[in-house]
Image (tube, rainbow, N blue to C red; front, side):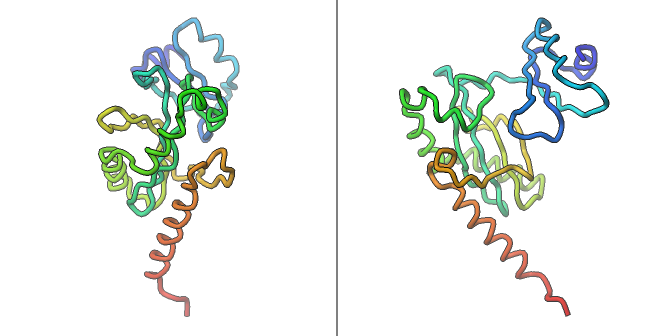
Length: 193
């Protein structure tokens, strides 16, 4: 694996994960050569894997933040911002003491209500490039509003009725936008004869 990574121009640190997965299961950060024995957890039996350069996206306050947008018919809708002390961020991070002690929920609310305009513009640029009617973007956002993209996925999950994972009811906004898009697309279709 290290020789293959080197041939591709990768250097430590990098992330390896099974292809076709979403949600972080099986994702491994190889920070340096001492971590190579951890590769034994993977079945190198012809399966495909993603290899991604790891960029340390820690904010100046020492926290990692993962932002998610859904782009529906060219319009970017913020889904959430989750903060963690770890680079591998999941919705369960909201249950940590960090959220209570630093009032991260207020920061997330500000993001979903008023995402950085530069970020929204970049989502539009991605839409214009991909020309997909529906997709999600997981990313980090720097102080200027630029995106460090982790994943763009046309099958990204948005529907979580649990208030723990959707405290600001963004799912409703996404579902309404998706319904409008479907109605718009169906309106242009001819009825079967």
